[in-house]
Image (cartoon, rainbow, N blue to C red; front, side):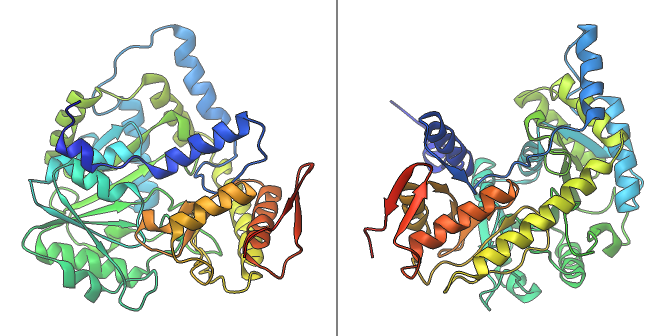
Length: 405
C-alpha cells in the first residue's frame, strides 16, 4: 500500500491510544486504574445540557457558519472581555471543533514549508505532530537548568530566520506548572520585536490552585488585537468538563481569522450545532461548576503529591494548575516507555511516558479521577517499584507477588 511520506512521519496520539488500551482491559474485567487521562469526572453543566437539548427538540439541526454561530461568538466575546479585559469583534473569533483544531488551523494559516515553531519542553504531545502536519518544523526548547521553566535566553537561543511562531501552554500540560508573569511578558516582547506569532494555549487557565490567578498575555502589549500577533486559544473541554462536545476557539487579528475560517471550511465546515449551543449554555450559564471542579482538582493534587513524595527516589514539582503532574522516576528507570509499560503489565496502572512530552525519565500522571483511584494507583506504583514495600499486593481477589528486582 502506498502511504505518503507525511502520513508515515506522524505518530498516533499516545494519550488517545492509552484511553483505548485502558478501555479494552476494563472490558476484559481487568482492575485498571487510569492515571493517564485528561478528562474530568464532573458532569456537563446543566445550562449546557438545557441549551443543547433546546436545539435538539426543534429537530432543526443544520449546517452552521464555518467560523461559529453568532450566539457562541457573542458568548466568547463576553468571556474575552471578562477574563482578558480585551474587547474583540466577531471577526476576531473562530469557533472550532476543540482547541486542537483551533491550533491546527492557526498553524495551517501561518506556516510555510520549513517554517519553525518553538515551544518549551515538556510540551503537549500533539504540538510536534501538528506543526509537521502544517508543513513546519517543531523546535522544542529544554531549560538549561533542567527544570520545567525555560528562560527567555533559552527561547532566544533557538530562534532562527525560519521561526514563525512560539507556543506557550500555561498552566502546562503535562507538568502543571505556570509560567511567571515576567516570563510571559518577555516572550510577548520577544515576539513583537522579531515579528513572530505567539500562540497562547490557555486551555487550563481557569483551573489553577493556591490562590494564583491566570496570566493575561494582552496585559503585556500596547498593540490592539488587529495589529498584534497574539493568538489566544481556549475551549470548554477542561474548565466545564465538556470534552466530548469538542468546542474550542481562537482570538486573533481578523485577517488571520479569515484565513483560518477558509481552511476550516474546507476541512470540517462549521462545528456541530448541538455542541455549539451547549457551549453557549456553559459560557452564559451559572459558573459555579468551574470553581467546584477547581477545588476538587486542588484537593486531588494535594493527595497525589503527598503520596508520590512518600516514594523514595521520586522527584516531583508541585503543579500550579491543570490536572496533571510530571514526576521524575529516573531513579528507578530512565526509559519512560519501558517504565509505563511495566506498570501497566504488572499492576494495571495506566500512565503516559515522559518521552512523549519531550522529557525522559518522567511519567505524566493525572489527578482528575477519584481520590480512591489516586491513592490505590500510587500505592500500586510504589509497590511495583519500591523493594521495601510488602512482597504481596491484591488486585481485587487476585494476589500479586513481586517476582522481579
